[in-house]
Image 1 (cartoon, rainbow, N blue to C red):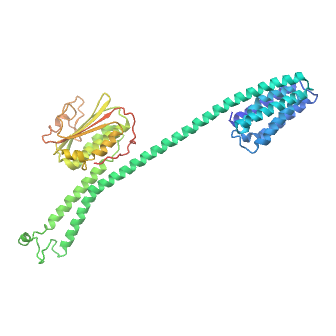
Image 2 (cartoon, rainbow, N blue to C red; image 1 turned 30 degrees about the horizontal axis):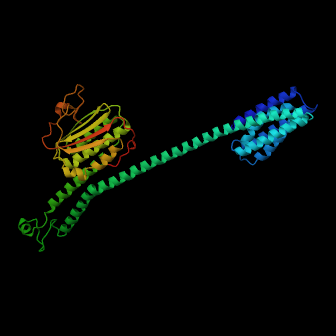
Image 3 (cartoon, helix red, strand yellow; image 1 turned 60 degrees about the vertical axis):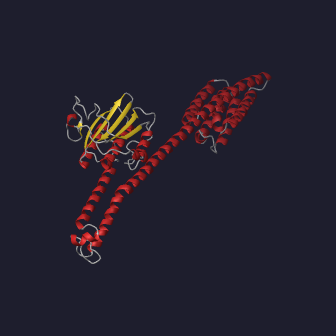
Amino acid sequence: MKSRSWWDLAVGASTLVLAVIVGVGYTNTPDGRWGAWAVLAVVAVCYASFGRRGIPDGDSPTNIPFTIVLIAGTALGVYFTPNMLTYQVIVLPLLWCLAGSTRNAIVLNAIATALFAVAFVAGQGGGWDLVGQAVFIQGLSFAFSAVFGLWISNVYDYGEERARLLEELTAAQDELAALHREAGAVGERERLAREIHDTIAQSLTSIVMLAQRMRASAGTGTGTDTDTGGRSIADPANAAPTGRAAPLDTNLELIESTARDALADARALVSTLAPVGSGGLEASLTRLARRFERETGIRVASAVEANGLSRELEVVLLRCAQEGLANIRKHSGADAAWLTVERRDDVVRLTLRDDGVGIAEDALDADRGFGLAGMRERLALVGGELEVGPGAAAPRPDAASADHAAGTTGIAGTGSTATDSPASPPRPGTTLAVTIPATPARTTTPVNTPGKASA
């Protein structure tokens, strides 16, 4: 009832139909037919020119004059011919739209039906029988209009309330998503800041100090440190009793070694930010393992048997693999690593083992630069668990230790099968195991957005 186009059609059609009825029906006076037609024409023109502006809001300044024209014109038409009472079918509902409130609508309907009853009786010469007839007809008209109008208004108000609540809910969800994105971005910036400060910045600081040391020693023109007597300590005879620093070549070696450490830290940091590629989890892990081998020389045997995972779970598994390999790069001193992803029923398990020096128990509790706390936070978002401990697990019948008919496993980037994989690790090593439900209840980590994890 609030659509302006619907009312245009309803008013136009009812006016035309009533004009036909007036033309063939009874009139109270010989000129009553022309009077009724004139009333219909005036009402139609007023509606088209300014009356329709108040639909659907009901707060247009033209509502009051059009309401007066509508009620007075219809009453005058009823005076000319009783057939004009049929116009109530459109007039009374139209008053509900123009009134602006339920109370005003009921009052206007009461006034309109009363005036129409008076016009009906007066137009036919009066009489108590006409009064009773008018009261009965108009009483039913008012009751029907009030009940139907209240029902339609409640339905409309309920729909508007639902729409408002839905809009608020959508806005709240958008705001929450924005907050999650902002929190993730802030957390990632904090993580990167910590990583850069603890790794690259420290290495660069060491390089600066070594360069300053060399500049001081280069002041003699020898390129080496000198003692208090101006003698070069590059000469073992001079350097031995003084206990001073090593010569230029040693300083250059230290700078080179420190720079290589900084480069390795930078590569490790970049590797933790790579997204899941278009080839899915298996292709992304294979690329990760190959790149890791090229950069570190540590062999990696990988196998992925987990299809049908959501994009969110693939991102979480990739991030865990990246963090785990970054730890192997920085802390393990390993020669080989084993990376497997398996799906068993409703559980996905990622296992990363190495043959390095292992991880101390106190390091597990303190999380000294291993990023375990951040990894656990990421897994908590999808209901996952993390297990890390010293000692490599015994080889399992996975891609790193058993033959597969498909022949797709082996050292990443070598194209060899499982028979070429590294032997069972002889050193203590470390095992990192990630367990995630294959269909988590909810996920708040955005796809391809790094979470709060540090390598």
